[in-house]
Length: 440
Image (tube, rainbow, N blue to C red; front, side, top):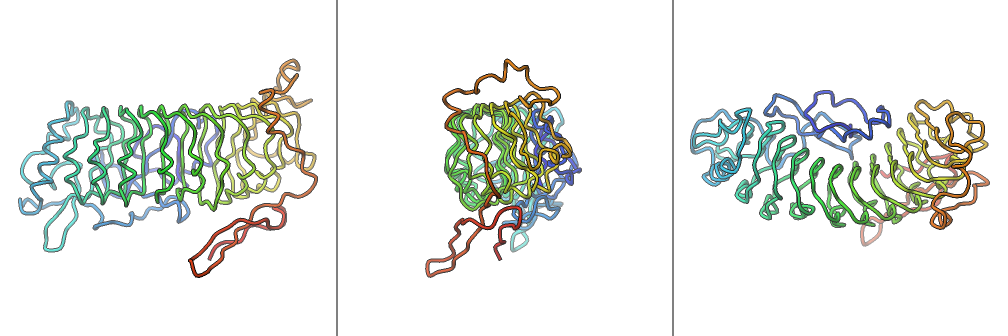
């Protein structure tokens, strides 16, 4: 699983799982960007995200060319003139270089430049396939000439002070698989240039000042990780989010409004972070379709009504945070969630626990139910705050009758026909007695 909370930094402790973090950390910072396994400017070693394969892997990414490694060649024939032009043009747009990284960009062979990584082409020539300037503390802008790096696989620029927007020409970086612009000063609308890069798998725009809506086309791309948290994005979350093939989607700490999308399909998402936005309305019943989810954080929004019983279908979930909303009713039946390690429902208006598993919930490590309306509970709201229903009219549409029996969780049916493979959801036996079948 991908560690998703902390100011972006290169870190060798990539085996820590987000699921072991306390929810309070979820409010501080968002994640260590994970990068391919090679040595960067500051000597740190990153790892490739492989959510579909079960989380973090210490193997290198599937390369377009060979894995980027520093070139030791000094021959001018090993680098093309266009790559030299691209980097020298960019060097002229960098105004501060306190660590002296860009000062090494001299001479006709870009493969000898610090932070630049090359791979061998047939015939013995080399080409630039990676740039890692993480934590170089550079100031400046990106330049259109970077699109001349046609074999570039990896561009990591986190923790600098780059400003401005992403050049339109970035859509010509057809070999790019990883784009990390996190923890800079970029602004403007979502960089739609990334939508036209066919091989992009990892997109990290965290900790910038991007604004405006998030395009729905983003969730149609074959991305494995989407990090957009800590920006100024606004508007509604696109309805097709749950159909994304990404294993991690973080939209936390923006200005997103409206309701959580309720259009669900087959999903491999493992971590979803919506905390600290302006989301309203109900928690959709379709959350039970997220059979692979391990981390779900909906805290610090204005969600109302009852929590759907389908959350008891999330059998693999380890961290669940729905605190700091306006939810009411009873705390749902979480007894079958054997992997649950951290549960937060604090600062809502819950009035009690499920009769079947109230005591079991109290034994969950990290269970926080403070500041609710639970009679006899410790650290609850004053009685006057519990009068009436929060959200008034809006909450009424989210009320649900308590379940009178086991919850039927969705299963997956796979049909193979003339047109190919189809995937659909159907009701399976109750969650307490079975789990959804796996796809071969």
